[in-house]
Amino acid sequence: MNTLKIKRTFAIEIFFLVLLFLFPQTLKAQSLLQSGPMVGYSAMREVGLWVQTKSEADVMIKYWDIKEPLKTFYTNSVKTEKNKAYTAKLIADNLEPGQIYNYEVYVNNKKELFNYELKFQTQKLWQWREDPPEFSFVTGSCFYVNEEKYDRPGRSYGSDYQIVESIYKSKPDFMLWLGDNYYLREADWDSWSGILHRITHTRSLPELQPLLGSVHHYAIWDDHDFGPNNSDRGFWNKHKTLEAFKLFWVNPSFGIEEGDGITTYFQWADVDFFLMDNRFFRAPNFLKEEKKPMLGEKQIQWLIDNLVSSQAPFKIIAIGGQTLNPVTGRGIETYELFKEEKEKLFELIERNKIEGVIFLSGDRHHSEISKFERENAYPIYDITSSSLTAGVSPGKEEKNPYRIGESIDQHNFAKITVRGPRKNRELECNFYDVNGGFISGIKIKENDLKYQFDRK
Image (cartoon, rainbow, N blue to C red; front, side):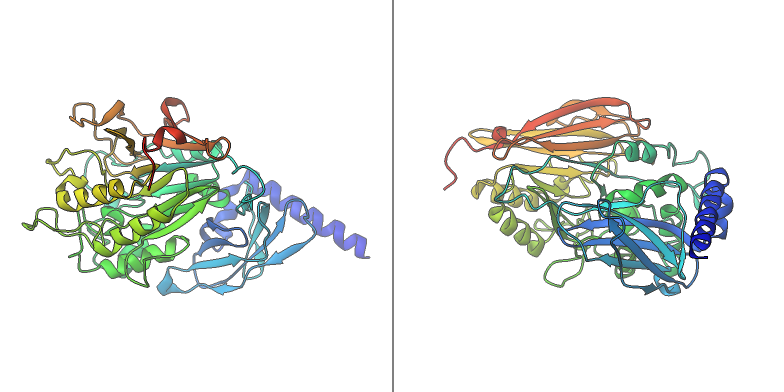
């Protein structure tokens, strides 16, 4: 009798899997799942997960080490609520370092079916044992998903959604979103329901789902996911857009010293990542005040404190806008608009002889690499990766004196790989088009970033 039940259950599961592959949209319509699941931050003993349902529901995740599929664990169960956009954050905390796990999603105790693999990984415990592991991540910005009735009239601003499928096929360990990860419209940013609608609409893009389900995700924001175009600290509804950002992303933390904003930090292998907030504390671009802030004193002090303490060969600083490019005008929002704060940050980096600083930026709707050469000191890089799907703004004619190579004036993404033995690591950054075709790349060696004099 038990054998018969097992066979019957197996046959039913096979039947539904066949339906899933043949008629995925039909089953999706019957599901209570709105978007996700999404894999968030990864630690050695814990991973954050995220799910969004269509209505109030109980959500839980079952997971197991791929090497021990019969030994299963469950996350906490979360009831999704309307005022939180029916989102749920779940923590997988019965984990071991350096392992890969598969997982299943249960909504109201019913298993959701997918035609792609759901998996996550934990960070490897390599310290004092072996060389740091090789890893790769994808980065990009400006992800616009059309919704005609709320878009501006005329030609659609978003296109080439297949780029996220190409990112998925490139098999990165994680993705770092560099801002404008969704575009709040005029009908969105003045109400809680409008904000939640916009993010839900973008997050529900079908092409995006496999990438969400098996690649870890971290994010910063820029003006369009913070508020209106070129918005700053004066945006009256910024606490609501911050609340929404926290609902839809699973970063390790949000803000410093229990303060506002999205600033946070994480480490992957031996590389440190500093995720900065260039909007919440930002003065208006054209405020007549010499010492006007973009990051603000507390955020800069936090960054410098951590950079000084960091032993990482590469110290990645993710920030929405470009830091090196001095070009302004025509709506261009580079750090040059906040010249005194910019000079202060770079002077602190130089005074403390901080090695291996590489900025990651988005915003510009074209990609480029800027390099600031300095006498007797390591160069500073700014890798700008934009745009994923939003309209392209060509940069070839722009006179950025620090650009090396060509401006990439098409939809693209950057894949960055860090490899090599400890104390001789190499960072390789390659840009790819919407179909995953190679465009251009650069290699930066750890020892190229060393000061030519002792750091004392």
